[in-house]
Length: 292
Image (cartoon, rainbow, N blue to C red; front, side, top):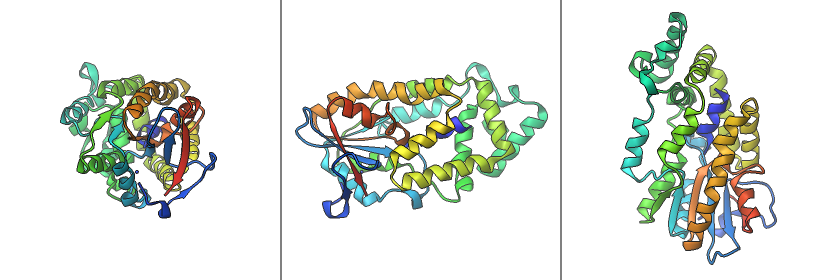
């Protein structure tokens, strides 16, 4: 289950007077100004949290000001496209007609059923064909688990872009993201869900800890937590973070060169040697942390 948290994790223009900026690659942030190389105007890079309590959210009004300064918005997926949303909803079922009951003894199934009833309000029978990894995520970031109605930073950015009549683009397709999830065998996903059912508070506490780090605006620390959680799954971490980060760079370079962009991707993608921040710096861009 630990490695699935980073999927969640994965995860905005403030007036100059309200921002604390640092000039020389100081402490990490969740928001970076991108300048240099062939850019005539700054672009911005934000680390998002895909489901977070409002109390841990970055200042929304300040974030949307940065969206207003740019001419396009780039997300992992084009959340403004109804086809993307429909495809996402339709991609959550297990292939091959599999059901949760295929992976558990009756006693184990009853434990998973209890978890879903307690945290999501419905029985396993109602979602028996949904991928176990998705059910784990739903439990981790559900209102009953977190004690709040979570919001998605990505959606807030998208809504600000639409309100400002900015075009919204996606770096990936739904199928490419689902392929990453499918790299984890269903049997392993089911085991993780059952492990969560035995001690749901453990996973919930991990997510809450990540939210607190996100609120502190330290992308490097959040990356380190993600790395620690996934240290036993190096191949998955490569697919989930490193490979995708590298694939995004040429796309981002091309799009930023065309017009200033507000880029919002999961916060786990920013930090580390193979993170988007360092990969862009290696290409010759200057990335200045902005703390809100």
